[in-house]
Image 1: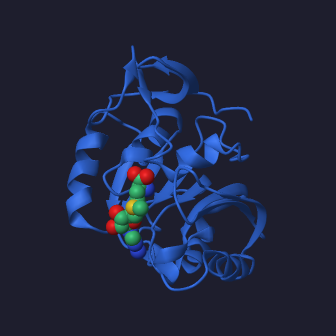
Image 2: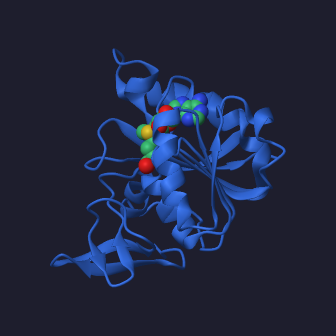
Length: 210
Ligand SMILES: C[S@@+](CC[C@H](N)C(=O)[O-])C[C@H]1O[C@@H](n2cnc3c(N)ncnc32)[C@H](O)[C@@H]1O
């Protein structure tokens, strides 16, 4: 799989070929000069790339990122993408996200609820890529209501956490239900388990039906 421009495999801390982007490191991330390690164990999108999924990311893309938390992954995205709108509804991680955005002029944190796209629709331009990692019940519905921001040939890069939908059901059955809801709005292009990096998570690449 071709990596987006701005993402490389580097030797970091005596490990070869680890994913990395160029930007200010966060916390204890390993570095190689200007490069910072992108750890797939801490990032669903990193895991999707490690699984060889065809994300369609090229570098310089406009991105809407839903569920940014403290910005671990959103910061990597902003290191190689174009404008990156990062939606997070919890105040505590938002404080850290604001710190992370300080050194990144393409990262725009938004303290908003991803279930209510009408509250940030006036800020976000059409995007090439919608990354979603909200890990709450109703993950497919969140992706569906945010489809409006994607260009016709854009991509949804979704991480589905089975336990967030129903901790008691078989993850495979949960994933089937989520995919069925998604298919009302998207054509699903590819799915992959994110194990061994993330247990009971499904990575999904999809494009809007419009
Ligand atoms: C698994 S964490 C995200 C981790 C992050 N994507 C990363 O890789 O660094 C899920 C985040 O989604 C946020 N979240 C859940 N539901 C949300 C919603 N409806 N709107 C905005 N953020 C939401 C949670 O507060 C949490 O910070």
